[in-house]
Length: 491
Ligand code: UD1
Image 1 (cartoon, rainbow, N blue to C red):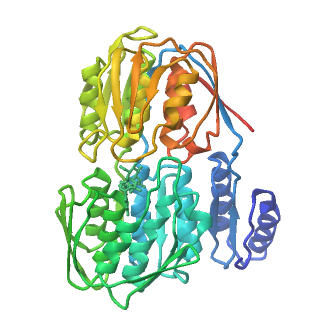
Image 2 (image 1 turned 120 degrees about the vertical axis):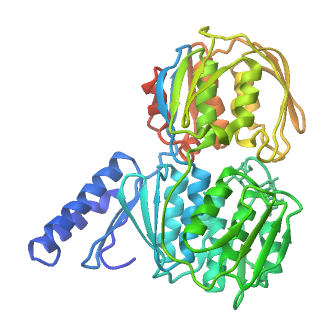
Image 3 (image 1 turned 30 degrees about the vertical axis):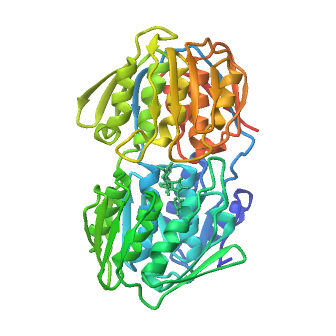
């Protein structure tokens, strides 16, 4: 622990007293001290961890404990009505924070969502030696000028697989990185072999010791990388490593997700030479140094899709603002096909109308997940919840992950009629759903259970909602503001 650091909410008070004393003695300005207290109060309000670096070399940090026992209690049957503002994209903010490791200059990121995965990524950056300031909510200023460690430890990787995004930038800038190998997870094996294969091709020496990937290279060199499977974080890791490599890297069969384009835009602002982002062939010409940048994260397309389904499944009407409708065309088209009325009212606004009935008679339609611009695997569970309320039979096929149907068995506990096959689920609808006790198994599965709970009659109690806190910013508050009866029950 560094000088003056206090860990844990319960030990913050002595630190405040000590720093207050320091400010009285003139060692620390009163304005700086008050600023720190203000941030800590915000951190408590947002139930997030936060570390504030003071000019006297002290640091006050607060770690709020994730209530792993928290539950959601939902009384279903309420039509949603009103406006919802979409937060920044988690899957874009994560690689953008990691990209800050590529430069000793400050990178400012705006519209960073306050979700647990971002707090974990911020903690990883701080543990590596970066300074991360949060001058206002959702703005992060990251300075990686003082990085002194190159390891993403198992403790963090096991709670957030996206910690592997530190690999590319650390290797690119410092020539060394140690990242714990993520194990399997609730939705499949999810190896990182393709990330490692690509970095090896760029000249990295990679060894696995005690479950930790140790990568080193005096300087990476550009290479032709062909991914046999499209991988989002794999593409991002290679783009970041290639930005500081010697020569040209061509990534074929690259992921085309909007989050890749957002990362490319940030890298370009930092001085990188990236071409072809949003196509399956990305070319990165390495430069010797990258600089600071100021960048605003794109809206979260999966949160947007989830709220569209929330309006549809309750037969309500929502105006969804701060969104990027162009990023979820496949979702919008599929939902229109089943009968959801979706109108783009402005560049960043959608109006969604269910048909006004509690159990709206939507028309069942099959869907198969696919890489972008196809129907996203991250919307599969939410779509399945809607299909339980649609007229007829639908087949929902998962092509990206091998084990992503944990929510289906839980939906059946509410009364949904379905058959789970190896790569698909047959849904027969519409089924009247009645509230029950459910267990959330992963992030998007949690979202689908919340949606089903909103449509069910009576009380639904969802356990392990810490999964949903990983990727949805205060979902229960956003839903409550548009008429849902949902509350967080402290464990
Ligand atoms: C990212 C998203 C996640 C989304 C997923 C697919 C982030 C932080 N997460 O995850 O929300 O569900 O894309 O859109 O952006 N694979 C390998 N070897 C590898 C890498 C991947 O076999 O080295 C396989 C995976 O097991 C999976 C498929 O490729 O079957 C796609 O995975 P990938 O795109 O890498 O997912 P993530 O980047 O982990």
